Length: 458
Image (cartoon, rainbow, N blue to C red; front, side, top):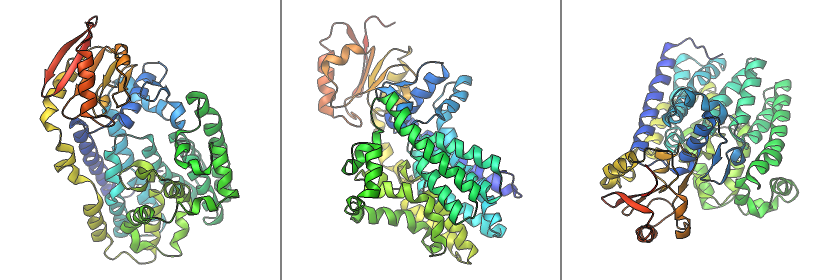
């Protein structure tokens, strides 16, 4: 299904993988990856690979209670060969880059020339969110990106097996993808004239949405889906919020028209604005659920091209591009794509934001190297992914209590750069408290980096 007639497409995909992988590794090495979410997924997948329960000590519940992402169990397979967080960074880069393979076929299926098809591929790879999301830790959502392309391609080519497998895997990436699958089914049913494929998607997406939100997530987390709190104005539960969307639609109107949403729409659409038309707009139907959720929430990370929340939207923006190319538009599309990348991609972080803690970089590396066992750890957010392959690791924050310090075998702190969700004052207080504890000893100190160890640890 992914076979193409152009060696160049594979070469482009391979080069894109290398570039994306390089920058994600560099960010991690610079201690700019985070506990949320790279540390969370690395810990869970590591535990799965060891045959242990993937209880997230960072969230306080089983990983399936997060987003019912059972695909994490498949991602544990390479961890069995060699447990390394770099597998996740590689898989993420591969997923994003290899999306060009089914995309090329979609372009050719639309009768685009080789030159036009390469333009579509380049627009996809230069779309700013591709580079930015790849940098933002790891999320299983990214696997849904090429899978959505494959699902559309399979439906158009009437490949039922490819369609069924891709839909199954998409649903395993995240519970909210079930809404995208339902919308995909409606699009296939009414616009693509693929009745059986549309009905399969609608039924599969609806059933999985109910199973994931009403059974799996509550069972493992003992609560509603975590994101429900971002839509509290609609109700206190998934079902109540879903009901009010249809019965009380006026509740969402006041949350749609605002400056943040206008900016978000501009970020999303500007790179492909030349391709937009009334005729091509139907390709955006499967993107409506994710777009609507991003627009009506007040949670700012859902309204930018940096975080992963726009992933279910991206494939259908590129389908708009294919439609635009088919209509004869896109004369300067490559130049425009490059301009948008240069303006909106976050590559400049590597000359600014990502270098602001270099003064403690060496000390942090040395301190981490001294933790050779799998004992429990308390540390700051940016170090968590470097130590997350253990049963118990906790993120230091301003709510950390002095009385809880005895729960840890290792406490690693940075006084100069305390990390996300905490402050230098909090770190200083913790250090002062630990220094008074007789069963803790200072194992390492340099450039404001402190490593304390419990006395019985060898």
